[in-house]
Image (tube, rainbow, N blue to C red; front, top):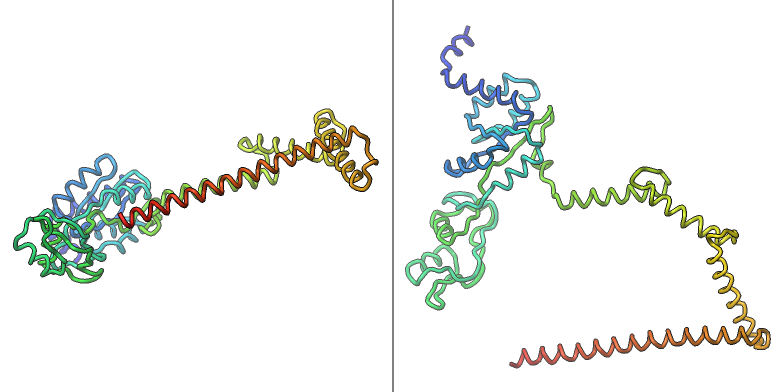
Length: 341
């Protein structure tokens, strides 16, 4: 009886709000709970417009959202845990990762208000401000900003941390930061959780480094290809590589085992010729008369070619070293010139 009595006094607009939320949850394959605390109404409307075609944002009271969840399936009831402070719901047909990326990209810097806790160290960079000399100089100094007059303008003499993370920002400092166009706050829809097909995704899962992710996929693809080639597991993607590898290995085996096949005869003859010259050279070292004049002439020509190649390499190395020393001297002189004007 108490429940019936209570239900009779629930305003019709609240009932409609709850039913609308329940219908939206059924309509979309994915929905998320987002925080909207601290977002000015004007910026919230702008975000709403920017999401058109991608997602639908529904702002409602926490009590009504919770009631809609509680009157839905068990999976949806789990989203109660993410209702906190000012909450809104976002509905989309995109995947959770795409939704998270869209919401993160929609965030923008915003001024900080007096009495707000600094979300991170607030730093004022050194440099000109564009303000003419006047009372602002003392006002900046009063809030801890090292200001001075230079060239008819107010300048910040050095980079200064004016508020540490976790500190409460005073009204005067907040006003001065706004005048200096230092916006420490990042305002946007803060995605707390997403429900898709019974699975809940939180920001720590959805925040993906796309560059690293792509690099990991490419590395995995290369490693998979190498493994399949090494294991000789043929697929449409690796069959050419496997055949080329098999061809090379069979050719090398044929040369090593001296298999007389037309396709490797040139390599076998070249190998035999090199071995013959090596034997002739060893024999000549022991007894010059052990080889005939034709072999001596061949070995001599081979030695001359090797000597020329070695001399050329040495010359190139010396020239490179001299060039490096000259460049080093020139750089040193230039450095001294710059130092002493």
